[in-house]
Length: 359
Ligand code: ADP
Image 1 (tube, rainbow, N blue to C red):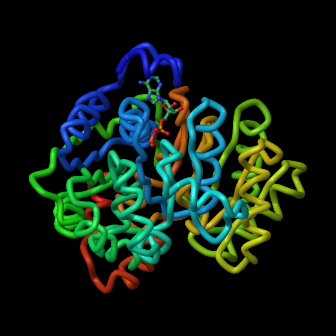
Image 2: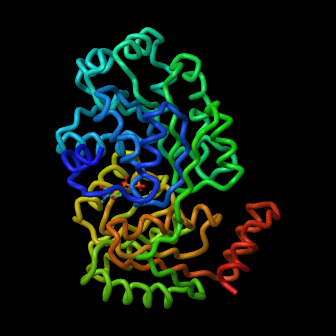
Image 3: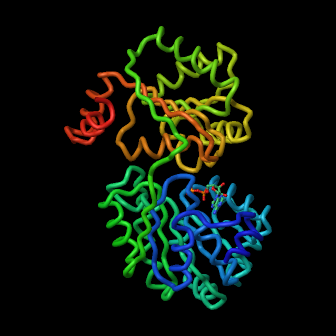
């Protein structure tokens, strides 16, 4: 196992929980890994197919995320591909079916709509695991619920004897139970790692939404952005996104914008430029979400309060994936809580968040 780790990834040892999860997968046991962002969850499903020379199926929520992963795995000499509408190479399906790939990525929609004959042939060739990345999307209690994830259990009855592996950075007890039940996991091994991101500094500041404050923020960011890596600024409204984006651009900082009302092409371009370090700052709503696998994000600023503590952990967690000290600032105003309370219909989540984090 260690020589495979060294050969393909260049690492000398496993991180906490990785080896345990891999051992359980090799024993064909279902697993649920709840481990912090950047802790190395992917390795848990990347190593078994290399050891067993069988295919690992990985369910991932986004095509762009799959494409990035496939590219970096190929660079390591690992046979990886994705199946989905964006796949232009017609031979991938046939190769995948015959067990050619170590790692085969699919969206949940694709996995559920792939014909039985494909699965039966691939089973014959050898499937060593069925991984569901961002598994919290299965749960209606989670913050990124995706209805297609709820259908994945149908494959359980087809992929008999294949261990199912759920992976997520955030799952409360309720969400964990939901994932286990929804994927019909059988006596799963549950690995819960530490959530402490030791390289992240968390700070909270009170602010009043005003043009004057935007100026102060822009000055702060200008000082920071020019000497460090990337910054993400999460805003609660598109109006705030546009205003801060405009102010930063006027200050001469290379700044991108991302929100749900932009066309998918414009969003894709913005995302790519940020990943390629052509932009220093990204100002976005939470639509700029999953799949931001950028190691050198040095600062995540919340201009207004996030929806829940899980959302905050996910969003701020995009900071400092490379382990280098990085900062997360949360700016809050009283009005945020009134608004959040209104949206939550009186749910106590926000108040609990406020009382444990701000006062
Ligand atoms: P996660 O999916 O948990 O957010 P990743 O799987 O993307 O995290 O891993 C985060 C980073 O840690 C990646 O750059 C990965 O190559 C690195 N990494 C993973 N496992 C190890 C290890 N055993 N030793 C050193 N680096 C590792």
